[in-house]
Length: 271
Image (cartoon, rainbow, N blue to C red; front, side):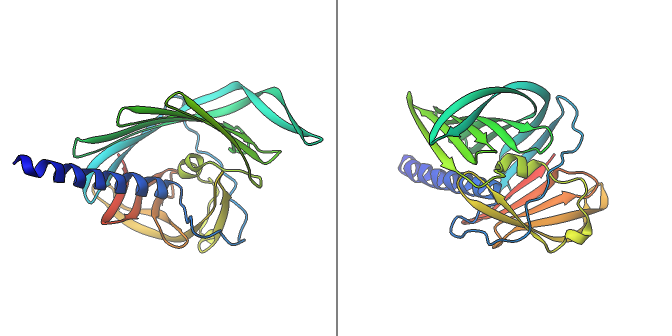
């Protein structure tokens, strides 16, 4: 039996890499090889009236096997110091503003064959009126190694500052992005309350820090769910198709996400 252990570990690592890379590609609604063509303006995001401390749990499956969970928690509205980057005569300076912000916390834990595990925690601070991101704090633990990332969004100036710390080494970079600048976690969990059937067929553009993306409202569909009967959903898809999101009409949270992956499919389901 010992001669097969290295092979088992290699297979497990391969599956793990597939799951993680595909999962994040699905979250990013990404098409990294093409820029999105100009279409409709980005959706104005309006969150559902979450309760403070309210949590939403999702199960992550790869080819029908549970590999992890994702949890969203709304932490309420807080008045937080925000660093604003200003450009004056080509030189940058900072001011500190106190802004009311909505805060969501997203944690994930993904494991394959009990051999490889990745954990992450992300806290996203959003403008209370536009729901555009102002700051994201991210911690990731993979194979026992920890990494922290801080993103500061300068919506007026059109900059994103990313500070990444790993193995006691810190790197900093500044990315120019056409405003409004979006964050994938906000786009993933928040959808407009006034979305109607008239929007079916429309494609919407979003600017993430490192790429442009587009998503299309494909159709409205009635879906039978065990113990729930037939319910109405909006179906979203990437362009070209990389994933599919089931968004229940009466709620504004995704109930199911299907992501094509190499050698299989990832399904994320609200539980």
